[in-house]
Length: 271
Ligand code: KIV
Image 1 (spheres, rainbow, N blue to C red):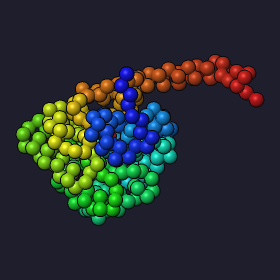
Image 2 (cartoon, rainbow, N blue to C red; image 1 turned 90 degrees about the horizontal axis):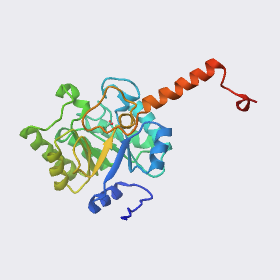
Image 3 (cartoon, helix red, strand yellow; image 1 turned 135 degrees about the vertical axis):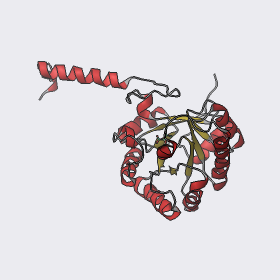
Image 4 (cartoon, rainbow, N blue to C red; image 1 turned 90 degrees about the vertical axis):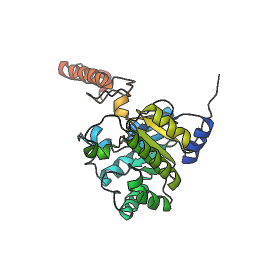
């Protein structure tokens, strides 16, 4: 049986090594201490404190409303639950676009106040000045191309991106720009598998896909989607590993029934 190397601490260098060795990288989102502990103990390599917290934790329709303070709160909670995984945090909407100095300040606040190991930024050429400035402070940056949810009002829809040549060409150019700038990895979201495969083979840094096929260097899913907590969200790329909504409802219903019937607490559950 093939034995996989166990890395005791995941760093950006380990991710690079994994790409070189053809070992797939497993990343999930995380937003709180308790879940982060479980993810870390399960052996996940990267925990992304995604701005999807705006949707799954705060109930907003898009990722746009979440603030830098809220992201730092989630990130600090995750970092306290992790001893091995690499923790990467999304720079939220409005904290880096069009102003590289503000981008640097936002990234520094995340690193200083949460203890995370890197940040993620959406976009290519249009955010490269921010990427450069953040990297110049020694802060690792993960890129994010394809369906970038912070630009949902520009796209107008969550359909697959870069199916047309112009957008695909721009994505490839952006991927090279981000690599040249010094990003340690790039998320490719909801793009054709063939395009993701091309980018992955052309780049030296790892690509992490979500709805980008199997030829990327790693995969990421939103934790609440893959555990079946999210409802009414079933994109083709999503594999549900559990139906936690039903499990939780079952437990809560049993608890309610036990309380109402007086069956809880019993003699052993009191002082
Ligand atoms: O915010 C997020 O959860 C993300 C992933 C979907 C990549 O950016």
